[in-house]
Amino acid sequence: MDDEVATLASRVEEVSSRAFAFVPLPWRILFLTGAALLGWASNLHILSLLGIDTTFALDMHSHPHLPYSLAGAPAGSAHLYSALYKLFMAYAGWCFGCWLLFRAFCAGNLEMMDYYKIIPQFCGTVIFIVLVCPFNIVRKRERDMFLQ
Image (cartoon, rainbow, N blue to C red; front, side, top):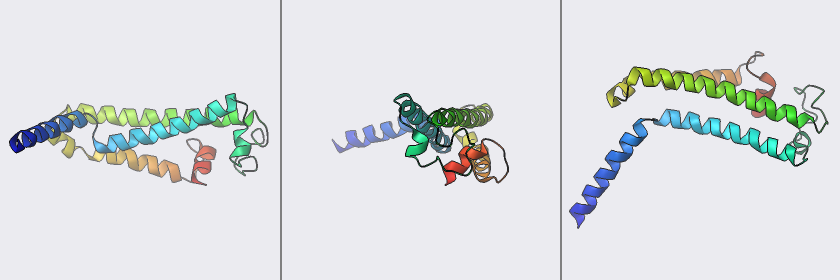
């Protein structure tokens, strides 16, 4: 019985390692971060459709980085979630492009994935640098609200 359990456990481990080799850990983390950003934008969108002023609820109506059109206006939340959708599209495009480059270099070979691990590290580093960048690039207002 113990041999059967050990054999089954090793088989499950082998199958799961092959299944997750398609999307290694750094890419899963970046994917979940993008899913969280999309979920946040969708949440604000749904709340706006229900008539809830999300800029007031999140205490963003007096935020210094928001344009005047968002300050205190119920229609301002539409600008907020549309900007978050655009931020998500930029994030997803960057991550997807880096992932395609990673897949092209590795071609499913596990040893090559370890060799080219610099690609997901570069992708995550660029995302972090853009997130904390003090210059007005890639939706600075929304990034500032995220960092607050």
